[in-house]
Length: 142
Image (cartoon, rainbow, N blue to C red; front, side):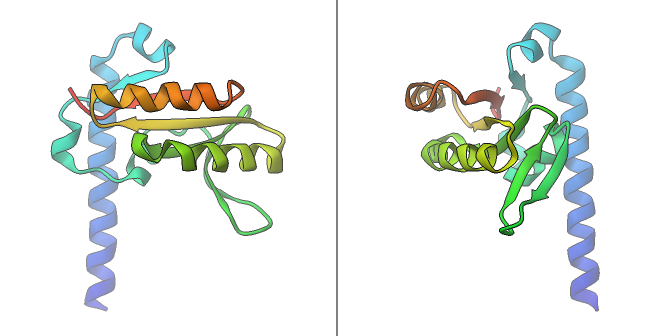
């Protein structure tokens, strides 16, 4: 029972932390940055957020949408089936986004979490591989 309470406390803490980080990023980012799909979040590396924290912060649709084959879409909006992933996992995100798009009839998209400015190379790889995939950039660095 104590383990379950601790697990719930950790989840609540992670969610609250994610909301605080989102609020800081939202209030300090310019509208131009949001329009370009680049979302700056200050001091994010120090908080050690997980992929699911970014999904919770930025998804404007259904989180963890379950398909009939039990696969889960990170974020399903009216327009996109979005796979969230770290930039270094760019190739995996392509396959998942294309599969989810095919299964739902939505447009494929990936939300790439960038740890450093050098991660921009992964964005270019995705765009080279398939220009149909919409790429949303999340900057997890200052």
